[in-house]
Image (cartoon, rainbow, N blue to C red; front, side):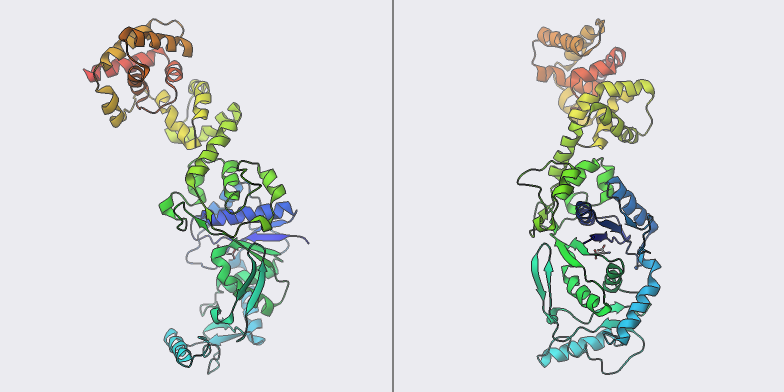
Length: 473
Ligand code: GLU
């Protein structure tokens, strides 16, 4: 069978991690089976859909390496792939369903429907008993799908196994609104059939829609896809993942400087595992191993700390030259200006130690900011904690003397000079070096000190020490 799967985001907001995970799993499944991965845009909600969000979806998927074989922008023989371009088709399907008796126009008001529900309850009938049988035939109003009385829908979910919904939980749902737009159920099912989708792989939050889609598929006719519902994504506290847990949109993760390959690796673990405890693997390995039957039914936990750790692992594994090249745009945007070639040379000198301690590309700019400014911004809590102690002026003064006489200003010479300062003042490294770190970089947290000083250079280092001596008074 030629596998055809789709991801069908609605461009009504930033892409949530849950949708990105669904996209990745669909993509891995398609690639594993040499199948077709389709990007459809579900924009029937014209009021909330925005071009900007569609662009973000596409850019985000491209960034993550989720290339689509058919769909918006790339086309394909089953198109169009944007729902707003398929309105005539939905209308046609609705008319066909009304004609064949699978759907009916309903002009009853919400109050009327509520009273019918109450009446059914009183008579101990199915809650939708009267709703399913409109007393009068309407020719306008919403269109409802007529759910067969005794229908129970059973299907074999590729992840969850046998799933069954009794008819009591499926009401006569609306498929077409009086303003001439299809509902999600109708548009999505029609598209899945028309696009010859073989597997609908989506989040468990949509599980309750599936019996409706199956009934609709049968009424419309065509090859019914298989369904697979991916487990929900929770925060570490067991609550559904939301803003409270940190970033949740693809854009935020991109902006923070995650590596797409690390992000992909982490996302693939949300409900799936390659084998046992192995957490770091390549996308090729994941694609080769991916199987829906290995996806878990249990909720997955999205743990930002673990993602950050993984990103750091990937960053450290990069060849140095690649690290420099890839971090470059983040350094520029972090500093808010381009660097000249001398500055880039300084950055490159510092790169190995920065790479060692970077969890995100976006961190890197901050770590090296002290190198590219004439005016250090002192972190005031660091200043108060470190610089206002006894003996700090002596540390700064003696250090200046020792550094000033160096001919070579490389790491080892700087280290030797500062160690002799510690000896002369008879103080330990912590007490003696921390003030230098604050003086030179502005903060208690910085790349390693001897490298920092050596790369900063003699003149600028001495200027900063002098400034601090004066400030301390
Ligand atoms: N537009 C729907 C969503 O983003 C598609 C859901 C589906 O995969 O059927 O939730």
